[in-house]
Length: 326
Image (cartoon, rainbow, N blue to C red; front, side, top):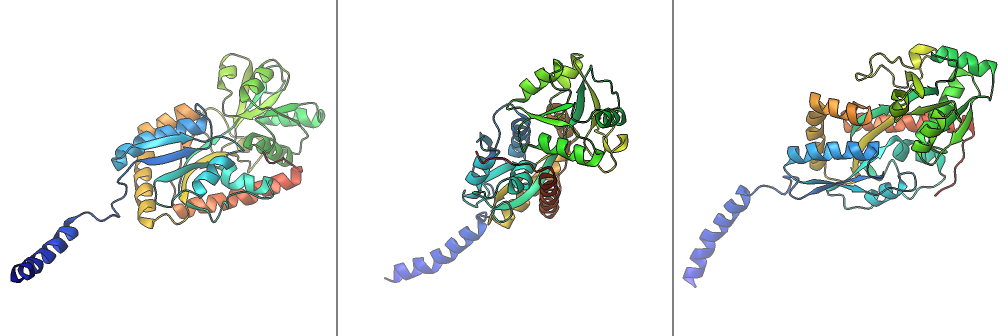
C-alpha cells in the first residue's frame, strides 16, 4: 500500500510534466488539409487552388489536397463546406459568384454567405479582357462605345451563361457606358470563343480569350481591372478608356466553416500572406490565370464580400437579370 502511495506521489507530478512538455493541440495542423474547389479540374479556380495547395502544404508541413466539387453555380461546394466540421481542415476556394453574386440572383440558398463562413483571405483577382472580333471597326473602348450608340442592339456580347460574372460585367458596361448590346449566353466558353472568332458574336468579356487573340481572330481593347495588369502593362483599363470608375473581375478567396478556431485561421492567414508575397508565386498565378495576388486580412476580405454583394445586387436589379436555380 505504502509502495502504491509512493508511486502515486511521484508519478502524478511526472505525468503533469510530461503533458506540459507535449505540444498543445492548438499546434494546427496535425493532419492533411482539404481545399474544396467549386469548379471542375483545369479551369482558373482549379489551377489557382492547386498552386495555393502546393505552396501551403510546404508552409504548413502537411499535405494539402484539392477536392473538386463543381455544380450549381458553385453552390454545391459552398453548401458542403458550410456543413463540414469547423476544425480548420476543410476550406473552400470561394469566388465572387459564391459569396456576392449568388445571394442576389437566387431567392434562397442552402448556405448563408455571411453566417456560415469565416473568411481567411482573398487570394487573387482575375479581371476580364474586353475583346472584339477583328471585323469590328473599333480599336479602342471609346470607338466601341461610339459604334454601339450609333447602332443600338446590333452588337452581340457573349458570356459564359446567365447570371455569371462575365454576363454581369457586360450588363455593368451597358449601364455605365450608356449602350445597348445584346447578351448571348453560352454554356461553354470554348464555344463562345469559337463563335466570336467566326464573327457570330462581336465581343466578349473573358479571361480566356488570348488563344483567339494570338491566332489573329480577335483583339483586346482593354482590361476590366482597376489598374493595368503587371503581366500586360500595355493593355489599358476600361476605366481609363472612356468609362471612368469601371471595374470588374472574379476574385478568389479561402474561407472556412464558421466556428473554426481562431488559431487555425491565424495560422492559415499567416502562411498565405507569406506565400502570396513571393515573386515566383505572383508570376505563377499571373501566367496560369491572368490574376494578381491579394492577401488581405480576414476583416478586409469580409468587407470585399459585402461591397461586391451590394454592387452586383444593384446591377442585377437594374438589368432585370433572372435565373432559375439549378
